[in-house]
Amino acid sequence: MSMLARYLTYNWYRVMAMKLRIRDMREDSDLTQKQVAEYLQCDQSLYSKYERQERDVPLDIMIKLALFHKTSIDYLVGLTDEKAPYKRKVKRWLRGDYNEIR
Picture 1 (spheres, rainbow, N blue to C red):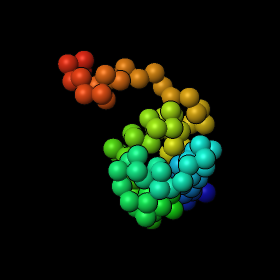
Picture 2 (picture 1 turned 90 degrees about the horizontal axis):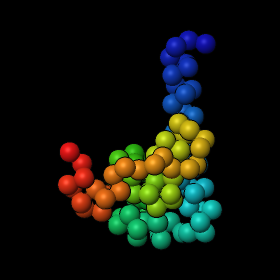
Picture 3 (picture 1 turned 30 degrees about the vertical axis):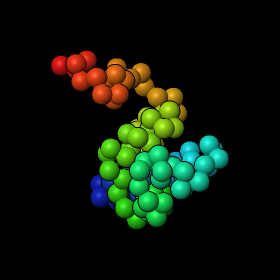
């Protein structure tokens, strides 16, 4: 298999894994697209496009999804099969306490 073919296969897997994982995480929580979209402060139609990979998911949305589902971005994009999130050292920063990060 050529290098290009391996690269395309790997990226196709990652895209499909993310597509399936953000939908599966939502469905496992018995939530509608509208409920998740409200949490993300976006339209349901936009969130639906994220799930179907019609739009790229911005990093800030990925962070919110990972926090919402209590997992890591690596899991959401298919880089790991470990659902448990990493220990977060910046929790206070995420709440707005900017003094913790230097």
